[in-house]
Length: 141
Length: 84
Image 1 (tube, chains in turn blue, cyan):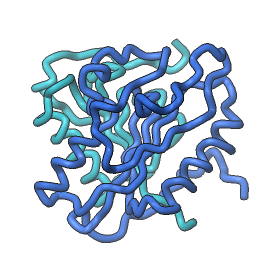
Image 2 (spheres, rainbow over the protein chains, first blue to last red):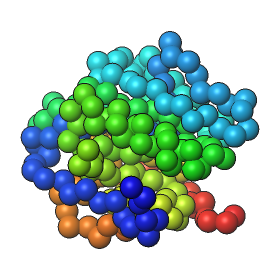
Image 3 (spheres, chains in turn red, green):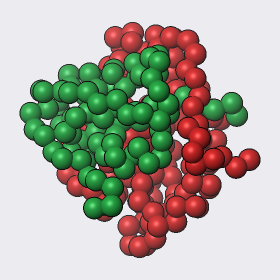
């Protein structure tokens, strides 16, 4: 199916946040320290993504991205990948749960078609299968 | 797949608008790399994430970007413009 570029792919959110499980997808180049870093040497960008589970220690997360200043994220990953903040909102009861899987990718590419038609769909499938997310927060750098 | 509801937190609203996101929050004047605020500002980070998630339940116009002010951020940075 081809999606019109003029069409807004709007999916309604049904239900209440207090009963919802939320995931995070970031273009900020976030990944675990023991995962392969994004390839910043390739001028075309890196079309890959990294799956981050819900139970990680946020101090084990890092950024590989050379198209924004991530020095603040190096100090506190929550400025671009708010996993601990989401945990706070779960404790307070504002949301019900945190998705089992989150995704980080490097939001810089010269391969827009491959990103749009390939990586984006793969990430959506990753979230759709097994993350239990009712909705997703998207962040950039 | 029936689709996944999303909400974007963007610090480059003009750039993001080109992709016509279904729902989006722009924390006014936050710089790139500070989507939820500065390091350690957990109260502000909570407020931004709370406001972004709340957009899921509000009758926003798909494709529009909602701007909110967070004076506690303490700085203002001009967002990048398209074509510059």
